[in-house]
Image (cartoon, rainbow, N blue to C red):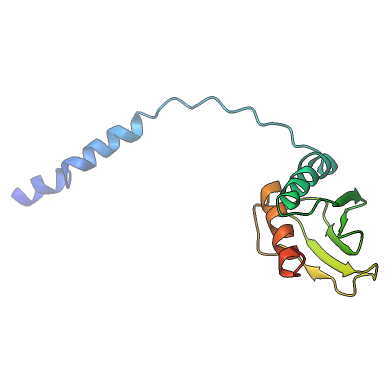
Length: 140
């Protein structure tokens, strides 16, 4: 008879308190109003280009010219002798991107995939990778 009594008892006092906790759920928090997403062109022109210019100016590049047209961010510096481009295939920061660079007005002969392992890309990370790539080229 003692076996039957033990089987009806909870295994531990924590098992009973667990049931009470699941029954008393906290009130749901008010949903945060999400900001509307900026159009991609505005992100590039209003956020990425100024941040890139600022970052490169801090590294001594004072003659940087940057523009954005039809999915392509293009930049020149070093009296126009150093050229680079970042192509945003999907028109998103997180989408497929390619990088090209060239010197002395010669068009780029190599197109490289760019930032392929990054899942969450923001403006700061994109600027970091562009600067890192220019540094790897030996231009900074």
